[in-house]
Image 1 (cartoon, rainbow, N blue to C red):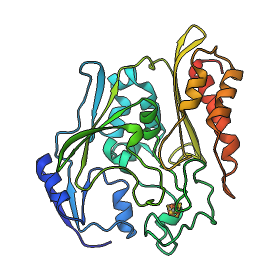
Image 2 (image 1 turned 180 degrees about the vertical axis):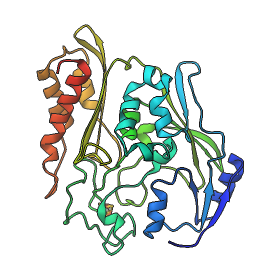
Image 3 (image 1 turned 90 degrees about the vertical axis):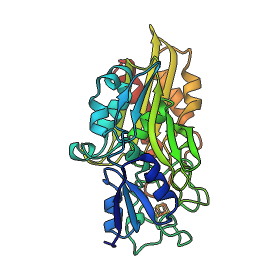
Image 4 (image 1 turned 120 degrees about the vertical axis):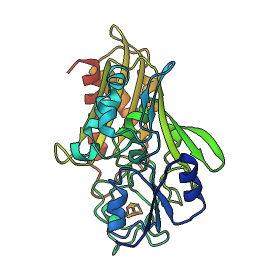
Length: 327
Ligand code: SF4
């Protein structure tokens, strides 16, 4: 592990200023991914700015929305009554992630910032454009079982590993950001990036910018929801494929729907065309199957992950059936 300077920030302003002016500085909160990356020499900050003392842990529900501070722990959000009552899809997704111990350390902002679990990214003996731009992609012709089927490029086929992000993109969350140039908000769907020619960039944060909160506007998706995660173990494993499904039903008629997938792309993957196809339809397995086929249009598998082309639509159908209560 490299040597680094450790600073505990007492104000948001000093945290941002310190990180913005030093190219080697990074924020640290729960550290559940960053410390691993540092131990392996993948990320090498010379200055760590600890933000745990900043007042960013609150979860509150002022007019028409839940605001979750970036330092709220994953476990605290998953157990929060406001979240359970109004946004149960988010609670389900959080509880599907990692392990109880990790959820007690990991923060919402850190969860958004966690890096891919592509094994070639973590093996410094292997080429990886995300870790070392221009070195190549070991996964393209390698063991790519966990990798993307949507939105990849010839530079990188990694996936975003978060469960929480899949629920937040489905729920149309908004990200609040503070930075050296002031505050801004970003729709969650635009926070993470596809790899393109710059796979080293996971998201659209600028240097020195700090996630301060995530907001979810009240919505009718608090009853018929399901987060389905398919993985190799029942706990402490990343998704092969996951689906966040939320339905707003009037009897058997679908008045509204939110759908997103995880484990399939470099960012949480919203299924807007499938959503459009479901609105106004009657709940049935056949309807869900048609939407799943639409959702999978454009998907392409690699040597070891083509099973996702079948697993994906089946997972969508099962998640929608469970959400609708027709299992
Ligand atoms: Fe690196 Fe992306 Fe290729 Fe994995 S898929 S080896 S993260 S460039």
